[in-house]
Length: 395
Image (cartoon, rainbow, N blue to C red; front, side, top):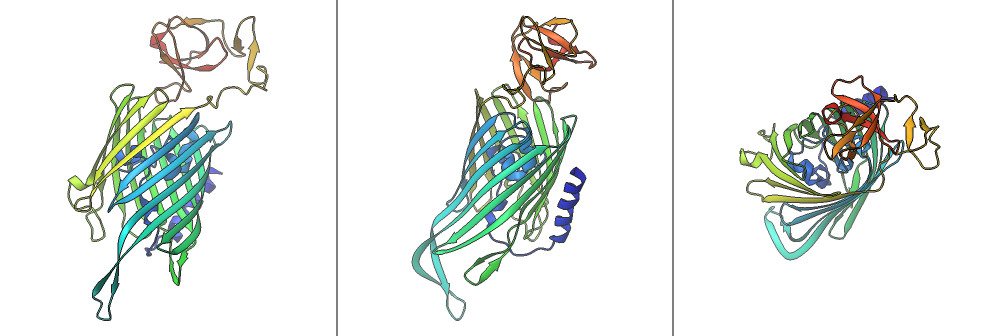
């Protein structure tokens, strides 16, 4: 299935590689301040709710319900607003999003028979809108795929055009630290406004990322059907638990069709602050003589972790046996460990790049399930939940 998905995406890229004029330019804009702060190099780093907009496969990395709102001051008095929601189930992750871009007070300019501009003094507005439904699945321990269905609408003054589109994404994560990704966005038919037809801006993105407990480094190459090849690189560093800083750099843009000419215009900066289950992200990117752009995203996590056992499933069916107090995994030994440091993360896998299930308090007694790894033990909490804990924090 995974090989077929990869072949399908590559075939679409080859069949649609010719450059054509395209509308709905807002579909090429990075959504989410985290991605923008990394210069857009996010297709392989995608592991949060903003994956909806860059690589739907990354949505499978989410473990709890999450909602986000995004505001962007774009070029020439343009506003871009986005709303996203993700819901992880036991086997799939579902997501929905609404995006709206608007620009008002645009002066109407006509041309006479000699092709000279003739302002009419009339102002009009432009707005673009998209709604998307995403399904993402982790098909095995290394590979995730995702599909997004879009409804698109563009309004120019009193004229309206509509279309449907499809996004495809695939994400491969080796040992949860090296990531390889491929995404194709805006696969769809042409839109028609009055007598004019124009194609959607199909977007191809591929990239790699390296993740550790405190950093993310991403590199991406992307191409839209109506512009030249572009590249970007970005880094994200966690200063401490609540604060993260980001920097990105655009390259492959000094060509006849590129929009960035100077070094300052290629660099983006950003930061994030986490307050409880809420994260606030900000990104700044200059665009030379056009204007500076600012993005703000606010996301909030809530609900139960998706890998917790369902209440209607008995402990025996989930691989546990009941004891006098608590629940014990069937393959657990009788060895016990005691946590020696407060708030130590219990993770999904044996490494610092795996997601945190919960944090364990000092003095907690843990039952050993697996000691095979050098630096991590698989243990069971008194309530039966299993995870991996670093061996240097227990005895």
